[in-house]
Image (cartoon, one colour):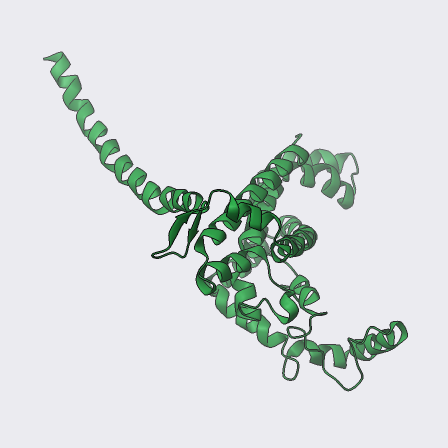
Length: 316
């Protein structure tokens, strides 16, 4: 009777876990692992996504290694990753300023301000920025003219003979091969990421008040608090955001597709690996080669993530 009672008591928990875990495993396998495994498999085939499916061994990888367009795209991504690391600084500073506010109402108000933009679809933000760069009606050129920056840029251009900024001609930021990458780098100014700020705030709020009180007793300045207390204690959040930024930058192609089309802008200046993979898969019907590019992207993400884990150390 005792053994039977124990088994009856354990049965609901066992079946509860079984019926929850099994569908979850099936769903993850079907929608995550199966597409990844299919991509790895078809990377060794001349495959157009439909009826052509010919095994060609490592030919796709050999072509990718010697593809100048693909390696140019990786160069663009390396440049964007470097600047995106710099773009993380405003989010860190903003989070620290909000955390240091003495008024809880003010801190809550600013947190809400950072949450509200999250309801705006990303495509809307993208189209707003695209209009911002419009050469005739865009706000960017208006600001440059109104502040006198554009005439100054024209003078600098005439001195160095760049041929980019000309008096009386509005710069075509998304249509000039020389201005495409600077436009993408400036994208999102002032670079205060909503999610990044909230993640940093979560880390800052876990710092015990006694640490700040001890720092105040020792007469530590605000800058030293930033350098010796706050930054070291939010390195976990910095590392998380750094990994997410690297993965997002390497995989992103939607922004470049909407702004510059499948050609990657003038002279292909914005042809990043993600966009090149999309073009090969859905425009040129070379899905097998696109799968090989995807595997190379995966390997680069693994390498950069490992470097991040090795060099961004957390010593609290």
